[in-house]
Length: 131
Length: 394
View (cartoon, rainbow over the protein chains, first blue to last red):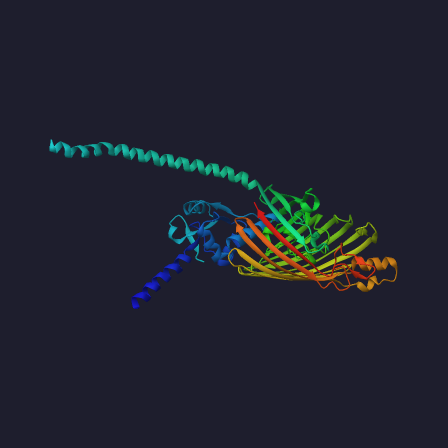
Protein backbone atom coordinates (compact mmCIF):
# COMPACT_ATOMS: atom_id res chain seq x y z
CA UNK A 1 0.00 0.00 0.00
CA UNK A 2 2.79 2.32 0.99
CA UNK A 3 4.65 1.59 -2.24
CA UNK A 4 1.52 2.14 -4.25
CA UNK A 5 0.99 5.50 -2.57
CA UNK A 6 4.54 6.59 -3.15
CA UNK A 7 4.33 5.51 -6.80
CA UNK A 8 1.15 7.57 -7.05
CA UNK A 9 2.86 10.51 -5.35
CA UNK A 10 5.81 10.31 -7.73
CA UNK A 11 3.62 10.15 -10.83
CA UNK A 12 1.50 13.03 -9.49
CA UNK A 13 4.55 15.18 -8.86
CA UNK A 14 5.77 14.28 -12.35
CA UNK A 15 2.49 15.59 -13.80
CA UNK A 16 2.65 18.73 -11.70
CA UNK A 17 6.24 19.52 -12.62
CA UNK A 18 5.51 18.78 -16.29
CA UNK A 19 2.73 21.37 -16.14
CA UNK A 20 4.82 23.92 -14.29
CA UNK A 21 7.89 23.52 -16.47
CA UNK A 22 7.51 26.53 -18.74
CA UNK A 23 9.57 29.57 -17.70
CA UNK A 24 9.90 33.13 -18.98
CA UNK A 25 13.45 33.87 -20.13
CA UNK A 26 15.33 37.07 -20.75
CA UNK A 27 18.80 38.25 -21.60
CA UNK A 28 21.38 37.26 -18.94
CA UNK A 29 21.62 40.97 -18.02
CA UNK A 30 17.83 41.35 -17.51
CA UNK A 31 16.12 41.77 -14.16
CA UNK A 32 13.20 39.67 -12.95
CA UNK A 33 9.74 40.14 -14.43
CA UNK A 34 6.46 40.28 -12.50
CA UNK A 35 3.54 38.06 -13.49
CA UNK A 36 1.48 41.17 -14.35
CA UNK A 37 4.18 42.63 -16.58
CA UNK A 38 4.60 39.28 -18.32
CA UNK A 39 0.85 39.09 -18.97
CA UNK A 40 0.85 42.64 -20.38
CA UNK A 41 3.93 42.08 -22.53
CA UNK A 42 2.52 38.94 -24.15
CA UNK A 43 -0.77 40.75 -24.87
CA UNK A 44 1.05 43.67 -26.53
CA UNK A 45 0.44 46.13 -23.67
CA UNK A 46 2.67 47.92 -21.20
CA UNK A 47 6.32 48.83 -21.88
CA UNK A 48 6.66 49.09 -25.66
CA UNK A 49 10.47 48.75 -25.58
CA UNK A 50 10.16 45.06 -24.63
CA UNK A 51 10.61 42.75 -27.61
CA UNK A 52 8.44 39.67 -27.24
CA UNK A 53 8.98 36.30 -28.91
CA UNK A 54 6.44 33.52 -29.06
CA UNK A 55 6.75 29.89 -30.08
CA UNK A 56 4.75 29.01 -33.17
CA UNK A 57 1.05 28.15 -33.01
CA UNK A 58 0.42 24.52 -32.20
CA UNK A 59 3.51 24.20 -30.02
CA UNK A 60 2.37 22.60 -26.71
CA UNK A 61 4.77 24.80 -24.70
CA UNK A 62 3.01 27.86 -26.15
CA UNK A 63 -0.41 26.65 -25.00
CA UNK A 64 0.98 25.74 -21.59
CA UNK A 65 2.62 29.16 -21.27
CA UNK A 66 -0.54 31.09 -22.13
CA UNK A 67 -2.66 28.99 -19.82
CA UNK A 68 -0.32 30.03 -16.99
CA UNK A 69 0.50 33.65 -17.89
CA UNK A 70 -2.27 35.27 -19.95
CA UNK A 71 -5.00 32.79 -19.01
CA UNK A 72 -6.05 32.44 -22.64
CA UNK A 73 -6.62 29.25 -24.59
CA UNK A 74 -5.35 28.91 -28.19
CA UNK A 75 -8.65 30.00 -29.75
CA UNK A 76 -9.19 32.79 -27.21
CA UNK A 77 -5.72 34.10 -27.94
CA UNK A 78 -6.45 34.05 -31.65
CA UNK A 79 -9.74 35.89 -31.12
CA UNK A 80 -7.88 38.42 -28.94
CA UNK A 81 -5.25 39.11 -31.60
CA UNK A 82 -7.80 39.33 -34.40
CA UNK A 83 -9.56 42.01 -32.33
CA UNK A 84 -6.28 43.89 -31.80
CA UNK A 85 -5.23 43.61 -35.45
CA UNK A 86 -8.54 44.71 -36.98
CA UNK A 87 -8.86 47.68 -34.63
CA UNK A 88 -5.29 48.80 -35.40
CA UNK A 89 -4.24 48.30 -31.77
CA UNK A 90 -1.37 45.94 -32.41
CA UNK A 91 0.01 42.83 -34.00
CA UNK A 92 0.90 39.49 -32.44
CA UNK A 93 4.57 39.03 -31.45
CA UNK A 94 7.15 37.49 -33.77
CA UNK A 95 7.35 33.72 -33.56
CA UNK A 96 10.35 31.39 -33.46
CA UNK A 97 10.25 27.70 -34.39
CA UNK A 98 12.08 26.08 -31.48
CA UNK A 99 13.48 26.44 -27.98
CA UNK A 100 16.97 26.80 -29.49
CA UNK A 101 15.80 29.64 -31.76
CA UNK A 102 14.03 31.24 -28.79
CA UNK A 103 17.24 31.17 -26.75
CA UNK A 104 19.34 32.71 -29.52
CA UNK A 105 16.69 35.41 -30.17
CA UNK A 106 16.53 36.32 -26.48
CA UNK A 107 20.30 36.07 -25.96
CA UNK A 108 21.01 38.47 -28.84
CA UNK A 109 18.76 41.32 -27.63
CA UNK A 110 18.88 42.80 -24.11
CA UNK A 111 15.20 43.89 -24.40
CA UNK A 112 13.91 40.52 -25.58
CA UNK A 113 11.81 38.11 -23.59
CA UNK A 114 10.44 34.69 -24.44
CA UNK A 115 9.56 31.39 -22.85
CA UNK A 116 10.84 27.82 -23.03
CA UNK A 117 10.58 24.61 -21.12
CA UNK A 118 12.70 24.84 -17.96
CA UNK A 119 14.66 21.76 -19.11
CA UNK A 120 15.96 23.75 -22.12
CA UNK A 121 17.40 26.62 -20.05
CA UNK A 122 21.17 27.12 -20.39
CA UNK A 123 23.71 29.85 -19.58
CA UNK A 124 22.89 31.98 -22.65
CA UNK A 125 19.60 33.12 -21.09
CA UNK A 126 18.21 33.90 -17.66
CA UNK A 127 14.98 32.69 -16.08
CA UNK A 128 13.16 35.95 -15.18
CA UNK A 129 9.81 34.48 -14.14
CA UNK A 130 8.52 31.08 -13.10
CA UNK A 131 4.78 31.39 -13.61
CA UNK B 1 50.40 -12.31 -41.59
CA UNK B 2 48.25 -12.46 -38.52
CA UNK B 3 50.00 -9.40 -37.12
CA UNK B 4 49.47 -7.46 -40.31
CA UNK B 5 45.75 -8.16 -40.37
CA UNK B 6 45.38 -6.84 -36.84
CA UNK B 7 47.45 -3.79 -37.55
CA UNK B 8 45.63 -2.82 -40.74
CA UNK B 9 42.45 -1.32 -39.24
CA UNK B 10 44.55 0.54 -36.68
CA UNK B 11 46.73 1.92 -39.43
CA UNK B 12 43.66 2.91 -41.47
CA UNK B 13 42.00 4.64 -38.58
CA UNK B 14 45.21 6.48 -37.71
CA UNK B 15 45.54 7.54 -41.32
CA UNK B 16 41.91 8.70 -41.55
CA UNK B 17 41.62 10.51 -38.26
CA UNK B 18 42.95 13.88 -39.46
CA UNK B 19 40.73 13.86 -42.53
CA UNK B 20 37.62 13.09 -40.40
CA UNK B 21 38.54 15.91 -38.09
CA UNK B 22 39.00 18.17 -41.11
CA UNK B 23 35.60 17.18 -42.52
CA UNK B 24 33.98 17.85 -39.14
CA UNK B 25 35.59 21.24 -39.07
CA UNK B 26 34.34 22.07 -42.59
CA UNK B 27 30.82 20.83 -41.78
CA UNK B 28 30.70 23.02 -38.71
CA UNK B 29 31.87 26.01 -40.73
CA UNK B 30 29.29 25.37 -43.44
CA UNK B 31 26.55 24.94 -40.83
CA UNK B 32 27.60 28.21 -39.23
CA UNK B 33 27.56 30.01 -42.60
CA UNK B 34 24.16 28.54 -43.41
CA UNK B 35 22.88 29.76 -40.07
CA UNK B 36 24.24 33.25 -40.75
CA UNK B 37 22.64 33.35 -44.19
CA UNK B 38 19.35 32.18 -42.72
CA UNK B 39 19.53 34.82 -40.02
CA UNK B 40 20.22 37.51 -42.63
CA UNK B 41 17.39 36.30 -44.83
CA UNK B 42 14.90 36.18 -42.00
CA UNK B 43 16.05 39.64 -40.93
CA UNK B 44 15.34 40.96 -44.42
CA UNK B 45 11.95 39.22 -44.52
CA UNK B 46 11.21 40.54 -41.06
CA UNK B 47 12.00 44.08 -42.19
CA UNK B 48 9.51 43.80 -45.03
CA UNK B 49 6.95 41.99 -42.91
CA UNK B 50 7.36 44.60 -40.18
CA UNK B 51 6.60 47.47 -42.54
CA UNK B 52 3.46 46.15 -44.26
CA UNK B 53 1.04 43.70 -42.73
CA UNK B 54 -1.87 42.17 -44.55
CA UNK B 55 -4.75 40.56 -42.69
CA UNK B 56 -8.26 39.61 -43.56
CA UNK B 57 -11.49 38.18 -42.28
CA UNK B 58 -14.45 36.54 -43.91
CA UNK B 59 -17.92 35.55 -42.77
CA UNK B 60 -20.50 33.50 -44.60
CA UNK B 61 -23.98 33.23 -43.16
CA UNK B 62 -27.26 31.54 -43.89
CA UNK B 63 -30.24 33.21 -42.25
CA UNK B 64 -33.93 32.49 -42.51
CA UNK B 65 -37.09 33.30 -40.57
CA UNK B 66 -40.48 31.74 -39.86
CA UNK B 67 -42.19 34.87 -41.23
CA UNK B 68 -41.54 38.05 -43.24
CA UNK B 69 -41.35 40.54 -40.36
CA UNK B 70 -37.80 41.34 -41.45
CA UNK B 71 -35.67 40.74 -38.35
CA UNK B 72 -32.10 41.41 -39.52
CA UNK B 73 -33.58 41.48 -43.05
CA UNK B 74 -34.44 37.77 -42.80
CA UNK B 75 -37.55 36.33 -44.39
CA UNK B 76 -38.96 32.87 -45.01
CA UNK B 77 -36.59 32.20 -47.92
CA UNK B 78 -32.92 31.47 -47.32
CA UNK B 79 -30.71 34.56 -47.24
CA UNK B 80 -26.98 34.15 -47.78
CA UNK B 81 -26.15 37.85 -48.26
CA UNK B 82 -27.25 39.82 -45.21
CA UNK B 83 -24.52 38.69 -42.80
CA UNK B 84 -21.87 37.61 -45.32
CA UNK B 85 -18.82 39.84 -45.62
CA UNK B 86 -15.15 40.04 -46.48
CA UNK B 87 -12.61 42.44 -45.01
CA UNK B 88 -9.03 43.06 -46.07
CA UNK B 89 -6.68 45.16 -44.00
CA UNK B 90 -3.28 46.59 -44.78
CA UNK B 91 -1.24 48.17 -42.02
CA UNK B 92 1.77 50.24 -43.08
CA UNK B 93 4.36 51.17 -40.49
CA UNK B 94 5.56 54.58 -41.57
CA UNK B 95 7.80 54.90 -38.54
CA UNK B 96 8.03 53.29 -35.12
CA UNK B 97 5.19 55.45 -33.90
CA UNK B 98 3.25 56.32 -37.05
CA UNK B 99 1.13 53.97 -39.09
CA UNK B 100 -1.49 53.99 -41.81
CA UNK B 101 -4.34 51.49 -41.66
CA UNK B 102 -6.67 50.70 -44.53
CA UNK B 103 -9.53 48.23 -44.08
CA UNK B 104 -11.66 47.50 -47.13
CA UNK B 105 -14.99 45.81 -46.61
CA UNK B 106 -17.36 44.09 -48.98
CA UNK B 107 -20.79 43.18 -47.63
CA UNK B 108 -23.48 41.04 -49.15
CA UNK B 109 -25.96 43.45 -47.57
CA UNK B 110 -24.69 46.22 -49.89
CA UNK B 111 -24.25 44.04 -53.01
CA UNK B 112 -20.54 43.48 -52.25
CA UNK B 113 -19.71 47.10 -52.98
CA UNK B 114 -16.14 47.90 -51.83
CA UNK B 115 -16.02 50.40 -48.99
CA UNK B 116 -13.25 51.66 -46.75
CA UNK B 117 -14.43 51.05 -43.20
CA UNK B 118 -11.17 52.15 -41.61
CA UNK B 119 -8.75 54.44 -43.47
CA UNK B 120 -6.63 56.43 -41.11
CA UNK B 121 -3.25 57.66 -40.09
CA UNK B 122 -2.25 57.24 -36.46
CA UNK B 123 0.59 58.55 -34.37
CA UNK B 124 1.49 57.45 -30.88
CA UNK B 125 3.38 60.01 -28.82
CA UNK B 126 5.97 59.00 -26.27
CA UNK B 127 3.65 59.91 -23.38
CA UNK B 128 1.07 57.35 -24.48
CA UNK B 129 -1.30 59.72 -26.32
CA UNK B 130 -2.47 58.33 -29.65
CA UNK B 131 -3.88 60.56 -32.38
CA UNK B 132 -5.88 59.21 -35.32
CA UNK B 133 -7.37 60.95 -38.30
CA UNK B 134 -9.30 59.72 -41.32
CA UNK B 135 -12.21 57.34 -41.60
CA UNK B 136 -12.83 55.57 -38.30
CA UNK B 137 -15.41 53.49 -36.47
CA UNK B 138 -17.82 55.38 -34.18
CA UNK B 139 -16.83 53.82 -30.84
CA UNK B 140 -20.30 53.83 -29.25
CA UNK B 141 -20.64 50.12 -28.47
CA UNK B 142 -18.38 47.54 -26.90
CA UNK B 143 -18.03 45.76 -30.26
CA UNK B 144 -18.10 48.88 -32.49
CA UNK B 145 -14.39 48.77 -33.33
CA UNK B 146 -14.62 45.20 -34.63
CA UNK B 147 -18.29 45.00 -35.51
CA UNK B 148 -17.65 42.92 -38.64
CA UNK B 149 -14.93 40.64 -37.25
CA UNK B 150 -17.21 37.78 -36.24
CA UNK B 151 -14.25 35.60 -35.28
CA UNK B 152 -13.47 37.94 -32.38
CA UNK B 153 -17.05 37.78 -31.03
CA UNK B 154 -18.66 34.96 -29.09
CA UNK B 155 -22.14 35.31 -30.68
CA UNK B 156 -23.41 34.94 -34.25
CA UNK B 157 -24.05 38.72 -34.28
CA UNK B 158 -24.16 41.46 -31.65
CA UNK B 159 -27.77 41.77 -30.40
CA UNK B 160 -29.81 43.69 -32.98
CA UNK B 161 -32.01 45.35 -30.30
CA UNK B 162 -28.97 47.32 -29.11
CA UNK B 163 -26.67 47.44 -32.16
CA UNK B 164 -29.48 48.21 -34.60
CA UNK B 165 -30.38 51.46 -32.84
CA UNK B 166 -27.66 53.60 -34.45
CA UNK B 167 -27.89 53.56 -38.26
CA UNK B 168 -24.24 54.52 -38.95
CA UNK B 169 -21.05 52.79 -37.83
CA UNK B 170 -18.17 54.89 -39.13
CA UNK B 171 -17.30 58.57 -39.33
CA UNK B 172 -14.80 60.87 -40.97
CA UNK B 173 -12.81 62.94 -38.55
CA UNK B 174 -10.35 62.38 -35.78
CA UNK B 175 -9.82 60.98 -32.36
CA UNK B 176 -7.40 61.00 -29.50
CA UNK B 177 -6.90 58.19 -27.03
CA UNK B 178 -4.76 57.75 -23.95
CA UNK B 179 -3.78 54.50 -22.24
CA UNK B 180 -3.03 54.53 -18.53
CA UNK B 181 -1.14 51.42 -17.45
CA UNK B 182 -2.27 50.50 -13.98
CA UNK B 183 -0.75 47.74 -11.88
CA UNK B 184 -2.47 44.80 -13.55
CA UNK B 185 -5.01 46.57 -15.75
CA UNK B 186 -5.34 49.24 -18.43
CA UNK B 187 -7.54 52.32 -18.48
CA UNK B 188 -8.19 53.82 -21.90
CA UNK B 189 -9.79 57.22 -22.46
CA UNK B 190 -10.88 58.23 -25.92
CA UNK B 191 -12.42 61.31 -27.53
CA UNK B 192 -13.76 61.48 -31.07
CA UNK B 193 -15.28 64.04 -33.40
CA UNK B 194 -16.33 64.31 -37.03
CA UNK B 195 -19.22 63.72 -39.38
CA UNK B 196 -21.06 60.82 -41.01
CA UNK B 197 -23.99 59.87 -43.17
CA UNK B 198 -26.73 57.31 -42.71
CA UNK B 199 -26.28 54.98 -45.67
CA UNK B 200 -29.87 53.75 -45.87
CA UNK B 201 -31.63 57.15 -45.69
CA UNK B 202 -28.95 59.66 -46.69
CA UNK B 203 -29.45 61.57 -43.41
CA UNK B 204 -26.49 63.86 -42.69
CA UNK B 205 -24.77 63.41 -39.35
CA UNK B 206 -22.75 66.48 -38.39
CA UNK B 207 -21.01 67.89 -35.30
CA UNK B 208 -20.50 64.33 -34.08
CA UNK B 209 -18.58 64.42 -30.84
CA UNK B 210 -18.14 62.01 -27.98
CA UNK B 211 -15.94 60.31 -25.43
CA UNK B 212 -15.59 56.91 -23.86
CA UNK B 213 -13.65 55.33 -21.05
CA UNK B 214 -12.70 51.67 -20.88
CA UNK B 215 -11.04 49.70 -18.11
CA UNK B 216 -9.87 46.11 -18.46
CA UNK B 217 -7.71 43.56 -16.66
CA UNK B 218 -8.41 41.02 -19.45
CA UNK B 219 -10.95 39.24 -17.23
CA UNK B 220 -13.24 42.14 -16.36
CA UNK B 221 -13.99 44.97 -18.76
CA UNK B 222 -16.02 48.04 -17.85
CA UNK B 223 -16.90 50.89 -20.16
CA UNK B 224 -19.00 54.03 -20.43
CA UNK B 225 -19.65 56.25 -23.43
CA UNK B 226 -21.41 59.47 -24.38
CA UNK B 227 -21.83 60.87 -27.88
CA UNK B 228 -23.95 63.46 -29.64
CA UNK B 229 -24.57 64.74 -33.16
CA UNK B 230 -26.86 66.87 -35.30
CA UNK B 231 -29.11 65.26 -37.91
CA UNK B 232 -30.45 66.67 -41.17
CA UNK B 233 -32.53 64.84 -43.73
CA UNK B 234 -35.80 63.12 -44.26
CA UNK B 235 -36.82 59.84 -42.72
CA UNK B 236 -38.91 58.02 -45.29
CA UNK B 237 -41.06 54.92 -45.13
CA UNK B 238 -40.61 51.86 -47.33
CA UNK B 239 -43.15 53.45 -49.71
CA UNK B 240 -41.01 56.64 -49.91
CA UNK B 241 -43.43 58.63 -47.79
CA UNK B 242 -41.65 61.30 -45.70
CA UNK B 243 -42.46 60.35 -42.12
CA UNK B 244 -40.30 63.02 -40.54
CA UNK B 245 -38.04 65.86 -41.65
CA UNK B 246 -34.98 66.30 -39.44
CA UNK B 247 -33.59 69.84 -39.45
CA UNK B 248 -30.57 70.42 -37.25
CA UNK B 249 -32.04 68.08 -34.65
CA UNK B 250 -29.73 66.95 -31.87
CA UNK B 251 -29.42 63.34 -30.83
CA UNK B 252 -27.47 61.91 -27.92
CA UNK B 253 -26.20 58.44 -27.03
CA UNK B 254 -25.38 57.22 -23.54
CA UNK B 255 -24.11 53.72 -22.94
CA UNK B 256 -22.56 51.53 -20.27
CA UNK B 257 -21.18 48.05 -20.66
CA UNK B 258 -19.42 45.30 -18.73
CA UNK B 259 -17.99 41.94 -19.57
CA UNK B 260 -16.38 39.07 -17.74
CA UNK B 261 -14.34 36.27 -19.29
CA UNK B 262 -12.20 33.97 -17.15
CA UNK B 263 -11.52 31.56 -20.01
CA UNK B 264 -14.48 29.40 -19.08
CA UNK B 265 -17.40 31.62 -18.12
CA UNK B 266 -18.37 34.54 -20.35
CA UNK B 267 -20.81 37.29 -19.38
CA UNK B 268 -21.42 40.40 -21.48
CA UNK B 269 -23.92 43.18 -20.92
CA UNK B 270 -24.57 46.59 -22.44
CA UNK B 271 -27.26 49.17 -21.84
CA UNK B 272 -27.88 52.21 -24.05
CA UNK B 273 -30.16 55.25 -24.16
CA UNK B 274 -30.73 57.27 -27.32
CA UNK B 275 -32.51 60.63 -27.22
CA UNK B 276 -33.30 62.62 -30.35
CA UNK B 277 -35.14 65.94 -30.71
CA UNK B 278 -38.58 66.16 -32.31
CA UNK B 279 -40.68 63.09 -33.04
CA UNK B 280 -37.71 60.85 -33.84
CA UNK B 281 -37.85 57.98 -31.34
CA UNK B 282 -35.94 57.97 -28.05
CA UNK B 283 -34.96 54.38 -27.39
CA UNK B 284 -33.64 52.42 -24.42
CA UNK B 285 -32.08 49.04 -25.08
CA UNK B 286 -29.97 46.43 -23.38
CA UNK B 287 -28.81 42.83 -23.42
CA UNK B 288 -27.15 40.17 -21.32
CA UNK B 289 -25.21 37.29 -22.87
CA UNK B 290 -23.98 34.31 -20.86
CA UNK B 291 -21.69 31.67 -22.31
CA UNK B 292 -19.62 28.74 -21.17
CA UNK B 293 -16.55 27.32 -22.93
CA UNK B 294 -16.22 23.56 -23.09
CA UNK B 295 -13.06 22.97 -25.12
CA UNK B 296 -13.89 24.05 -28.68
CA UNK B 297 -17.60 24.58 -27.95
CA UNK B 298 -19.10 27.73 -26.48
CA UNK B 299 -22.87 27.56 -25.99
CA UNK B 300 -24.49 30.90 -25.14
CA UNK B 301 -27.82 32.50 -24.31
CA UNK B 302 -28.79 36.14 -24.83
CA UNK B 303 -31.75 38.12 -23.58
CA UNK B 304 -32.20 41.56 -25.18
CA UNK B 305 -34.82 44.29 -25.17
CA UNK B 306 -35.57 47.64 -26.78
CA UNK B 307 -38.37 50.13 -26.13
CA UNK B 308 -39.15 53.64 -27.38
CA UNK B 309 -39.55 56.01 -24.44
CA UNK B 310 -41.39 58.96 -26.02
CA UNK B 311 -44.55 57.38 -27.44
CA UNK B 312 -46.56 60.24 -25.87
CA UNK B 313 -44.93 62.62 -28.37
CA UNK B 314 -46.58 60.68 -31.22
CA UNK B 315 -50.21 60.55 -30.15
CA UNK B 316 -52.46 60.09 -33.21
CA UNK B 317 -53.87 63.65 -33.10
CA UNK B 318 -53.24 64.21 -36.79
CA UNK B 319 -52.65 61.90 -39.75
CA UNK B 320 -48.94 62.80 -39.80
CA UNK B 321 -48.60 62.01 -36.09
CA UNK B 322 -50.50 58.76 -36.53
CA UNK B 323 -48.09 57.68 -39.26
CA UNK B 324 -45.14 58.60 -37.03
CA UNK B 325 -46.69 56.55 -34.26
CA UNK B 326 -46.99 53.51 -36.51
CA UNK B 327 -43.49 53.96 -37.95
CA UNK B 328 -41.55 54.85 -34.80
CA UNK B 329 -43.19 53.33 -31.72
CA UNK B 330 -41.40 50.08 -31.08
CA UNK B 331 -40.71 47.56 -28.35
CA UNK B 332 -39.65 43.96 -28.21
CA UNK B 333 -37.85 41.25 -26.28
CA UNK B 334 -35.46 38.84 -27.98
CA UNK B 335 -34.14 35.52 -26.73
CA UNK B 336 -31.20 33.80 -28.41
CA UNK B 337 -29.77 30.34 -28.00
CA UNK B 338 -26.52 29.77 -29.81
CA UNK B 339 -23.31 27.83 -30.12
CA UNK B 340 -19.85 28.87 -31.21
CA UNK B 341 -17.73 25.97 -32.40
CA UNK B 342 -14.01 26.60 -32.91
CA UNK B 343 -13.99 23.95 -35.61
CA UNK B 344 -10.48 24.36 -37.04
CA UNK B 345 -7.61 26.83 -36.74
CA UNK B 346 -8.83 30.37 -37.51
CA UNK B 347 -12.39 29.28 -38.28
CA UNK B 348 -15.39 29.40 -35.96
CA UNK B 349 -18.80 28.01 -36.91
CA UNK B 350 -21.85 29.49 -35.21
CA UNK B 351 -25.45 28.34 -34.84
CA UNK B 352 -28.11 30.67 -33.48
CA UNK B 353 -31.86 30.68 -32.97
CA UNK B 354 -33.39 34.01 -31.93
CA UNK B 355 -37.01 34.47 -30.95
CA UNK B 356 -38.53 37.95 -30.61
CA UNK B 357 -41.92 38.83 -29.17
CA UNK B 358 -43.68 41.24 -26.75
CA UNK B 359 -44.18 43.91 -29.42
CA UNK B 360 -46.97 45.56 -27.38
CA UNK B 361 -49.07 47.75 -29.69
CA UNK B 362 -46.12 48.30 -32.02
CA UNK B 363 -44.50 46.80 -35.10
CA UNK B 364 -41.67 45.56 -32.88
CA UNK B 365 -39.42 47.87 -34.86
CA UNK B 366 -39.72 45.84 -38.08
CA UNK B 367 -40.20 47.78 -41.31
CA UNK B 368 -42.08 44.95 -43.01
CA UNK B 369 -44.51 44.54 -40.15
CA UNK B 370 -47.33 46.79 -41.34
CA UNK B 371 -50.57 47.73 -39.65
CA UNK B 372 -53.68 45.96 -40.83
CA UNK B 373 -56.14 48.89 -40.89
CA UNK B 374 -59.21 46.63 -40.76
CA UNK B 375 -58.19 44.95 -37.48
CA UNK B 376 -56.02 47.79 -36.12
CA UNK B 377 -53.30 45.24 -35.40
CA UNK B 378 -49.86 44.60 -36.88
CA UNK B 379 -49.49 41.52 -39.07
CA UNK B 380 -46.83 39.79 -36.95
CA UNK B 381 -46.65 39.63 -33.18
CA UNK B 382 -43.48 37.53 -33.02
CA UNK B 383 -40.68 36.22 -35.22
CA UNK B 384 -38.08 33.47 -35.14
CA UNK B 385 -34.80 33.57 -37.03
CA UNK B 386 -32.21 30.87 -37.67
CA UNK B 387 -28.56 31.57 -38.39
CA UNK B 388 -25.72 29.28 -39.44
CA UNK B 389 -22.50 31.20 -39.92
CA UNK B 390 -18.78 30.73 -40.27
CA UNK B 391 -16.25 33.36 -39.27
CA UNK B 392 -12.63 33.10 -40.33
CA UNK B 393 -9.52 35.25 -40.01
CA UNK B 394 -6.40 35.08 -42.12
